[in-house]
Length: 621
Image (cartoon, rainbow, N blue to C red; front, side, top):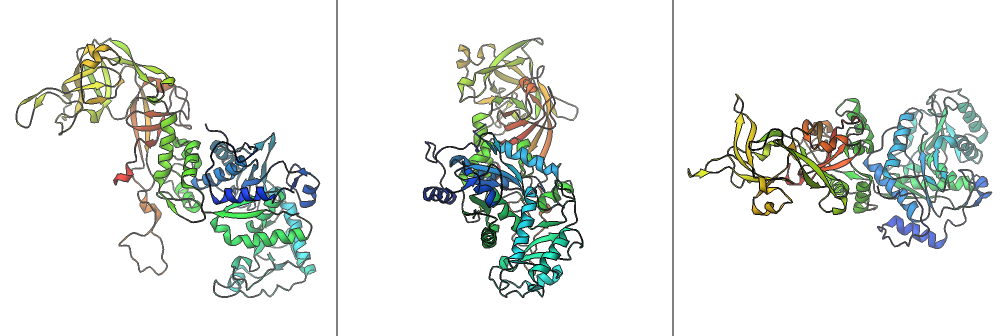
């Protein structure tokens, strides 16, 4: 596996060339200007006074990856993980893993555990110099509540008792200003009393909210007195029922960044309109003495948009709950647990992230770019093995029934230092069904029996080389009562073995792979493909009714690929029986496969196809 992207380097000017992007330019400019050089660190997240009592911050920058533990991470999260941990690594910093667990109704420990596992798998390491930087927003609930009371006392927040519908109606639109709440001029003492009673559990959900007091006429709707605390009588997976008021994400997020000394808070573009409130809130809390400058700054980049997948959490949940897939780790799912089970590699994701770059403009990336990155990395790292996926028996009629010998095959044709392995050879072999044709088409160079040409002339059986083995000549075939070919007969040319002087005496155009029937490992193999058959699942196509006044999407489930998985029983090279879960191989001629990490057992691995050898979709599959 590639080096972890979290180990800090002393300088960004190492000999390794870093992929340039606007975020790197910002970080480099800040470091050159000493923008964050005055920060201090008390050894853990804390308020401004606590941090000021600490030593100078040993991290030149601090970034964070802040998932909400309400689902499994998907491909879009991979881009953010690699970006945040990569910046920290390359500029002598630290990247925090922070769980944004401010919503007690949707969060579960299962998701926390899965996220930790996936970030680690992708190479993220939040332990630096023996210090673990794994945090939870819920650890800061007391400070957040204190910050909210401070805003009320300073006249920057008030308790609003309108209904949700009334608040929505008074908010205004993009072209019309909002209207003040009738409770906007509530005195600080009354709002503070109500807020404390909200915390004490006196009121039902939805009866009151705490709102920041900014400007109801602001062009940016996010500044029109946004809600910052709401009542939720719900059990929290970490704090239990200690609280019944919870902060809104837009309030919690900047506070979490400030308490953790984050220098560069990197978000996707949908948070760009929230940045003015982010800055407004931190400035108010700094004025109150709860935080110290320099304050964190938020920067936005474009999120990942991919063809042939859906990354909407709602749609992913629907796929799982309605059993269109076998779970969150189904290898067809665009989740990191699914990608890992499919056989994708962290290094392939890193290559993908570098290839697509970091920009501020949204674009649609073809999934083939990710597949090609995985293919490139697997080509370099996957040992070669032989697998027959559609087996047909081949009988060498001039070989003794009890004959056995060994043939040598390279573990990787471009890496001679990986050595060779021995493959058993016997009278009966398995070959691919497509490698035999009773009536061969023009240009067919694999096995076919003696017959006649289209002109009626006699045609001998064709010769091919058994890869790493002998040249054979086809003599005929056996059929069952229904006329189906059940076995191919051929004769072996004894002096033609690969690696011997006699091998050069035979020139053949066909070269096929095989597995000894006596020694083969029979295993289930799952051939995975794209989950959707259309580049934009659910999007309208040419000819769809354009008169829909609401512009509704089609049902994305209508674009499910009915051939996204095929389960077969294959005959494999016997060495594959010893494959451990997550061992990856190239099955020659077929693609890259992995021993399934869930269903494999010692001595009985099952295999999943990660990617084919070539992109078949670009040819109009």
